[in-house]
Length: 148
Ligand code: HEM
Image (tube, rainbow, N blue to C red):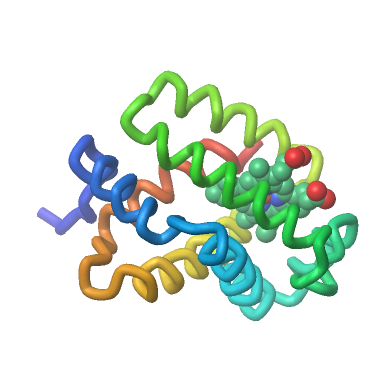
């Protein structure tokens, strides 16, 4: 039987919630987190930057882009905080999905986001970072937002 990655089960959900709170703890960290994450996304694929023209994607330090970044991370924060409340999580993901539909985001862009997050989170958590739990639980969130 092939090895399967740990799923996003009840224990993984609680662990990710607790670890996310450390990653996302303070407003200073939130601004820095946004900058690091978006740089990592734009570095992986420069084409993605054009999606953010409306919010000044050409300058991630502009107030417009920082406000955008705070909305995205705020959305992620809400989703993670609801990982142990499936009904409300589903409602939030359905709403986020709606907010992304008209922007026509290719699914693979969510992989770029995931790569960026999976690099950033351990920088705040060190060896405590539980990779499998983050990976599978991010997939739960991304799968709820992307797609038709
Ligand atoms: C907007 C969350 C992934 C592209 C937003 C907004 C939120 C959000 C809350 C603001 C919606 C509004 O106020 O209208 C998230 C979360 C993600 C995610 C939680 C992953 C877990 C992505 C990815 C991309 C993307 C991977 C593309 C690389 C956009 C764009 C906007 C947006 C283009 C609109 C920017 C504007 O205001 O012009 N996202 N997002 N998002 N997101 Fe995402």
